[in-house]
Image (cartoon, rainbow, N blue to C red; front, side):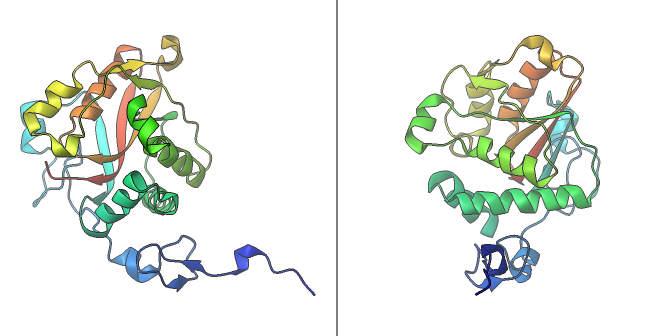
Length: 231
């Protein structure tokens, strides 16, 4: 009897639960319904209602990172998949989000950075969750876009409250001097970095992380996000 490999079986869509022949665990109908971003600030990726290069917030004060790109809006199905991935350790949801993110990035033919760097979580949260969502996301994303190099270059000095539950002013205070470099400083000299995070709300976390990377020689820092909130 001939062997039937597991790759011959249809996949199951993580959104609707139906079988699919798609290359990722998300059927074409569900993928088409995901909340993409039509117009965004070129600096912070904040969704905009009309075309303009920068949002009002970035016009007033530019963040430390040079640009940001988000695959989706933080709402609906994407918000639910991120909750399953981060808070329920649903790694299949994380793999799909990374694959969909990679597919968009490749289709847009964006310039590749030298290295991917995940935004870390504090060790106390890692102890509770048992895994680092952004590290897992970065691993999957690296594989899906062709084996791009990545490094856990940052660490948190102190625990930062969840940014989604803090008011905008508190977010900037909470993340001030929150990050430190884990790798050897000269490793970043002249390097272009893509910071990987799941969600951006205010941009405070990415700003604080980008400052550290640039202070240690990074040439450019771009933020790649699964989703962008409108905060």
